[in-house]
Image 1 (cartoon, rainbow, N blue to C red):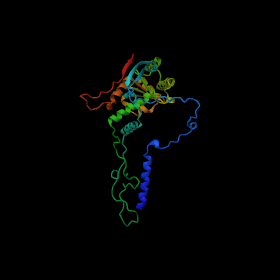
Image 2: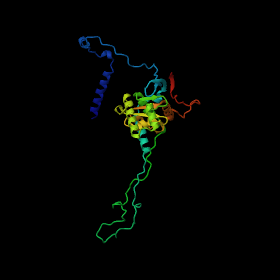
Image 3: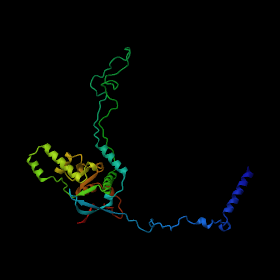
Length: 320
């Protein structure tokens, strides 16, 4: 066995010595010239240089433009510059999912309640003696095994709310707004967003000449025609209007014609509301307030050279 091992070792060393010889001692067999020619008859085009040099500095966008429109004619009124950390974040489905589940758990009432065997009305005496009757042994009539008895492990009032980091929740708000902005589904209007009902109809409504059913039918038809002309109706995914406070005509019109959209005050808006309908129409002041309230993750407690990282400005007017 030792002789075979030494023989194999010797063969391995000889192969290593051959591989270690310089290349000039090893004969190189060149292929014929015809075999090394390309099969293409035309001149091959040069590939474009798609790589970036390491010396070039990478400068990502820091601001995005935002147009402010008038309602309902949607004429551009002004142009503003907003930080990319506010309206140009990448889509994070995991963060949006956490925020929607957190909001759903927080809104659950948790008021379901059932009676245990000790809460059911009636006497708790044993129905018949343990032995000698020929029947199965039983306890009281409140037993969960009997009809009308208590419920084992039934629901009781509880709190279903879960916890979510504040910075993660704020990031979800701006991620939802960024998703709408990148898809062109975020329409920002001037302050005072209101439904422009005809003056003749408003005068008749104030004089209480028409009954309620006639008013609702006119408003429903008017809102439907307005939303259809702008392609904001249910055919195109409905529309969510967000205002700073309640606007009578807008909120009443959306309640009557709820199949085409809805109107919400800023304090009633959640992340889920920003993702449900086809587009978001929001006032400029409401958007600024929303960004200011949900930007806690843009600040840090770390102090470097006596300075803290400041938040990016919320909208700067570029024109006019």
